[in-house]
Image (cartoon, rainbow, N blue to C red; front, side, top):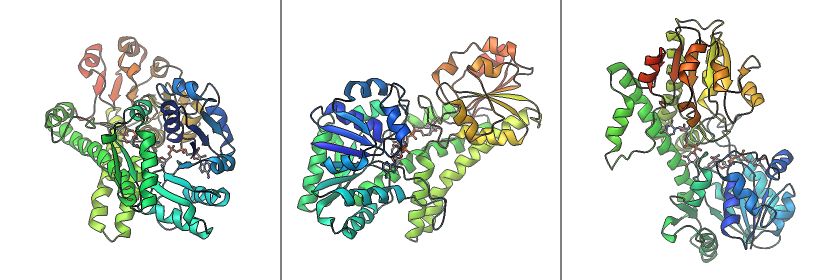
Length: 447
Ligand code: NAD
Ligand code: UDX
């Protein structure tokens, strides 16, 4: 069997590397139009930083895992084609700011229809609005090749930073297909691929629309938990409760559960906001305004949380940041990734720049030029947390990198302007210990 995955991004690369690892007899080609990205996948400096990914790729690359820009050639040769291209929020025209841009998916469908002559299974791996399979089908029919293709939905649930372990031990794999005989046969083919390493009971099969919708709903529920605990963090700050204690107390209830209750500067990443907006757009499309409004609140609270954090920094620094050095520790949207898409740090830095702050950023994985491109050329980049904090009035922890827990905060305190302020936007530091050193220390949801 031959698999081709269109899109060598955060999902396509790691997902296909895992399939290649678990199915050495299957030839897996990951293709992309972006030459630099493919060159990076074929080098020692992969375009995606994920713990364990470099080793995984090196084990299978050029054996049964190939990264190539020869998109059409590999599409033509494959039995199973995954579409794993971006589906960002549309920035123009109807649905701008909410609907998913499906241009890349349509482009893939057209390319597949143009080059394929024999039967194929085409799989939506990208996160798409409900009924996107219909769009793909109608493109195939436009080329009078509808009969050649079976379209399935197989959304990806990996989280960045833990992609390799999520792929190795997924909570579940979801495969949606038609109830027709050929549809079910195609579903079985994909079940058999995952079943090489995922127990059958963890592979769920549904109809295509349930599968497409479940992906949006999963992300909406996860983001809603973060917004819920972040909303409560404001109540904690006002009332003297501690948000970590509240999260622990409610998380012990097995109906609530302990995960995804970490209060923060707000969720980021390429998925949560985009997928909720997509859900909101769908609800409005179906005339379900109250439902749309309900989910929109999840994003509103996220915006509120970022603003609240910035305001606290400004207020604590005597309402002026003009000419004050502010150290930003962490720029990625979460630890163990180099991804900055929708990172809270982008918005917080932009707001602090507006206030006249001199910002110095340190992140262990994000390239300097990317930080500058997302903020301003005026932003300085440090090569260590200590360097960033040297001479600063305030330090802001915006990503929960483990290394930030182990810093020598006494030495950092000595190097800062007094009074030295530290704002822990991830609640990873011991505020009492920092206060003992001499810092004015602030967390999220802590009075
Ligand atoms: P990405 O932007 O990192 O990668 C997409 C790649 O597709 C790009 O390299 C682009 O050059 C390529 N591409 C676009 N059109 C193409 C075409 N016609 N032919 C060949 N290549 C083409 O995106 P990503 O983060 O990997 O996300 C892909 C999809 O998976 C999105 O729908 C996203 O919502 C979903 N998803 C992402 C995550 C995540 O953690 N990033 C998790 C689950 C699902
Ligand atoms: C998410 C989903 O978890 C994953 O299943 C889906 O496939 C893609 O979208 P990802 O965005 O990579 O994954 O990371 P995730 O761990 O979900 O974190 C998203 C954001 O929420 C990050 O900014 C993170 O810092 C924040 N977060 C998460 C919190 O602030 N508190 C939490 O308790 C959990």
